[in-house]
Length: 215
Image (tube, rainbow, N blue to C red):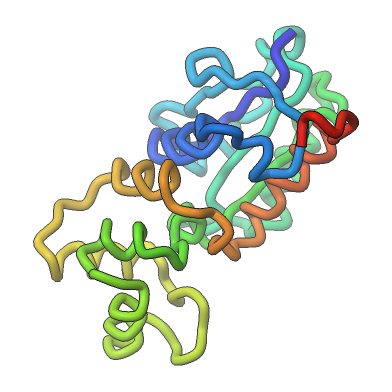
């Protein structure tokens, strides 16, 4: 049986999750024991459904993995047209999964608020460089000046709009591959997103450190 399956709403989210989990000694960054991860076997995209479709069909998509994976994580944005909100998204998906045979202790539904870009807004020079800035300070100064960020805040009010505006400023095409590059190289210690912290917490719970050598 495989350790954990990651079900994502779209390809961009899959690329970000995979880039993070494929990092060398990722488990040490998380603070958990090593666990299996192979992008081909352990990730599934709700192809053509996006967030609304994943909300309605996560239990159907995961049904076939009940006996192949010990655990499952559902990753979905909390903000989209018609969204019932983070709390209801998590409760409803978890309820349907339980009704379809998944032990609630084996699954976790993580709703990113408002959306994926909150995860990749990392205060690192690598992230700033990917958006065309030479430093974190110049990125924050620009974002604050153009009212994408409130002075003294740690992330923009609308991370996705801010990322797109920064790329337009520097004539860089928008692509989800940018997020993959950020997550694969930048230090995630600068990520303050609660959903990202929730993902790390659940992996620590499922794969606890029991052997000092695995630290």
